[in-house]
Image 1: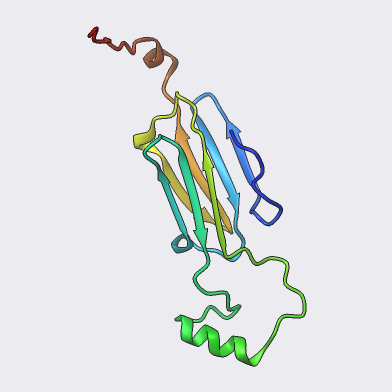
Image 2 (image 1 turned 60 degrees about the horizontal axis):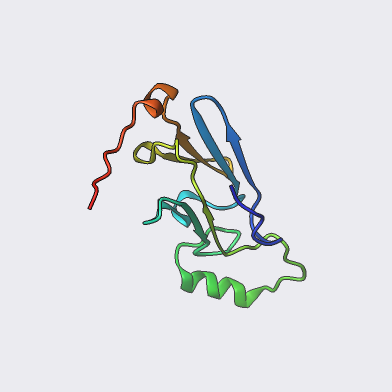
Length: 130
């Protein structure tokens, strides 16, 4: 699936069942607008995260956030990953058209349905001879 990107990257779980794979990304303090999840041109799952504003109070825009930062400073800051990108190589049995994602309690969950064993065996591909 993947190797650990770096120590500041969020923790990721990958779970396998008979019917799906599930990817969970620990992202406390993030919301769904902070994520971009897509399948790239090579068929890989790309999870990108960028925190638009880091204010604890949940300010409405960047200018408001900058004003609040001017009035205070961090003495210690350990849980601030503002940018993150992870690419996962998907197994061949993932149905890419039906991937779903949701955000709940600081965890991004991505459901990757698997092709049924019957449909895997019935796939045939004619190869043209040139």
